Amino acid sequence: MRHQLPQLYERVFVPATVIEELRHTSAPLTVAAWLHQMPEWIEVRVVSVKQDAALEVLDPGEREAIQLAEEQHADLLLIDERHGRLEAKRRGIATTGTLGVLLAAGKRGLVDPDKAFQQLINETTFRATPEVRESFVKQYRESRKRRD
Image 1: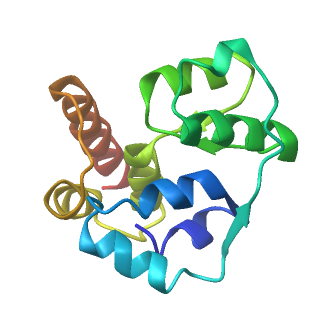
Image 2: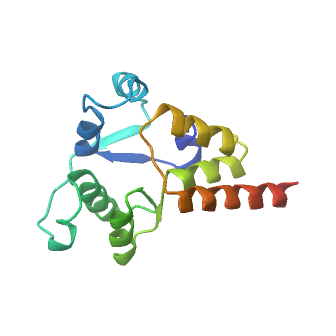
């Protein structure tokens, strides 16, 4: 998926705090390798953090991602954490999650979403509830039916 982001989205901004979270010692080796040779299409941004009581329940990465999306008037925010997504939507920010990106890349023929999903589960710390997994499979199958 990491190679498809620049094909799907014009620019990808990442808060510096998110990069620091990814550097955690428990991060998978694939994440550490990616950080060591971060693609040039990633723009790391320091966010002008503002006190905002509604964001205090979120961890710093989600909080700054929402604030960066607001600062940049982003068209779309990639965020997986449920509370962060709800708050972003409350603020009128369009969101998608990792699985939404896989589906978008699949619709454009950039990846096989099912294979990419399995790789995501097996090689990263990504987790999804059974309901989210079922929804992904259903959407993937529906999009295949429309293509065929």
